Amino acid sequence: MHVVILGCGQLSRLMAREGKKLGVDFTFVAMGDESTDCVNGLGKIVQWQDSMSAEALLAETGTPDALTVERESIDVKLLIELQKLCNVCPPPEAVAACQHRLKEKMALTSLDIPATPWHPISDEASLHKAAEMFGYPLIVKSFEDGYDGKNQWHLQSADELAELVKTEKPENWLAEPKINFTHEVSLIGARSVSGEVKFYPITENHHEGGILKRSIAPYELLDSTKIDEMQANMKRLMESWQYVGVLAIEMFVTKDGFTVNEMAPRVHNSGHWTQNNTITSQFENHIRAILDMELGDTEVNDYSGMVNILGMGTQQPKVDHVEGEVFLYDKTPRNGRKLGHVNLSDSDRESLAQRMSAIESQIYSN
Ligand code: ATP
Ligand code: MG
Ligand code: MG
Image 1 (tube, protein in one colour):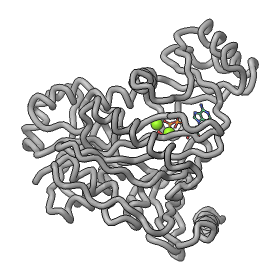
Image 2: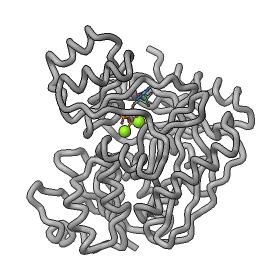
Image 3: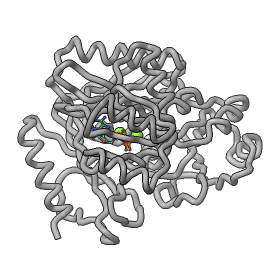
């Protein structure tokens, strides 16, 4: 079996490492000038050129059993052309919705899935209108190219709004009220070519400065009817797209229930803990789903935690004495860059949280 992945980052690395155990061969496509450090030695690497056609790309990679992506910011036209020639998972329509915040909201609301309220911004007047509608703090996000909180502004006042429009042109943005959430959680599920669907337990996520710092699963503060509702929503969305692969939905939990923040048409950072504490990780299940193998077990026994290892300047991360299983991505250190993660588990949630804090102190001590 042969899988082509568009992208050469850590998610490609983690998918390939698990896929290889199933006997799958991988080819990675380096998009633009991205580094291939994460996937060196894991398969063939092909460089995508700007003007390259789908035919020319497949001539270099070979026609795979499935072609997939490790990020949502992929040229959808290329995916549509590729789909005429090979099995592309997830479908281009789903990638298109997840890479564009307005299309994403439309997809959610068309299926009556609760999403954070929004107002589209095309000029300064619409930005003022959003401030009137939602008040402050006001969260403004560009339609596209947002990740790790980039291209996103949290405005506290009309003065800050006035400052922002001095340096940034208000267009192709979305404004949202700041949600007063109790927790941020994510639901990760997989759907196979044959339509089999499985979900992982809900994960609680902690972000700082827009970047995921740590995740703990399972999240238990929602009653089971809410969890069933979330799963039913994801299943409806997957079926409407004829989705194949892993899908992640990030949500805010409020006193009224949950509301969707955003989605990712791929394996997700908040699911990295599945490597250590489930029979089948999200990475393996993504590969199984796209190759139409039976999906593996997603049940967990213990509490699972994942701590992200983020770059601090150009220093290599300090992980020598860290407990738990450390995964490094072989990336060049840079401030705030995701360089690796640590997975650990515990039968007691509080003890797990304390051990995770101790790991963070070790990684980030001076
Ligand atoms: P990712 O790296 O997860 O793709 P992103 O850059 O696409 O992130 P979001 O997930 O939309 O951005 O926002 C990043 C974080 O900012 C969220 O996880 C949350 O902590 C905060 N945030 C975003 N939108 C809101 C909101 N409307 N209300 C409150 N907090 C928000
Ligand atoms: Mg995002
Ligand atoms: Mg997010």
